[in-house]
Length: 94
Figure 1 (cartoon, rainbow, N blue to C red):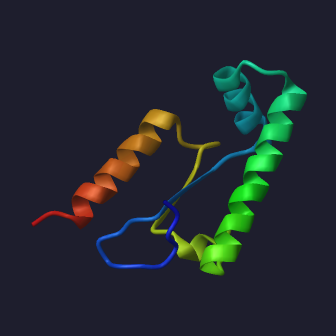
Figure 2 (figure 1 turned 30 degrees about the horizontal axis):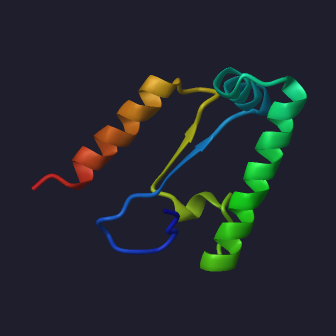
Figure 3 (figure 1 turned 120 degrees about the vertical axis):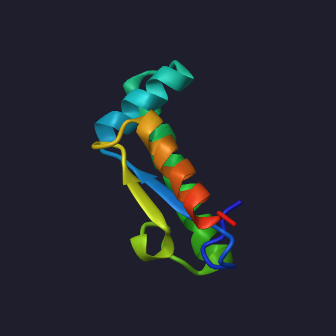
C-alpha cells in the first residue's frame, strides 16, 4: 500500500530506471510487444501518479518522500533487493 507519510517504523523505497530497461522488463514479464509494453508502462505510471496525488496529495516522483531511491540503470535487481533488506535490518535492529 502506498503511504508517503507516516511513522518512523515505515520505510519508503522508490525504484527508477531508464525507459529501455523498463520496456525490456515489461516485455520479458508480460510476453508482449514493445508498443504494448510502452502502453502498459504509460498507463500504470499514470494510474499510480493519480492515486498518490488523489489520496496522499503527494508527487510520486519527488525523491524527498522516500527513504531510499534506487536507480536500476546502475543497480541490478539482486543488489537493489540487498540494499532494501540491509536498510531495513539497519533501521529495525534492537
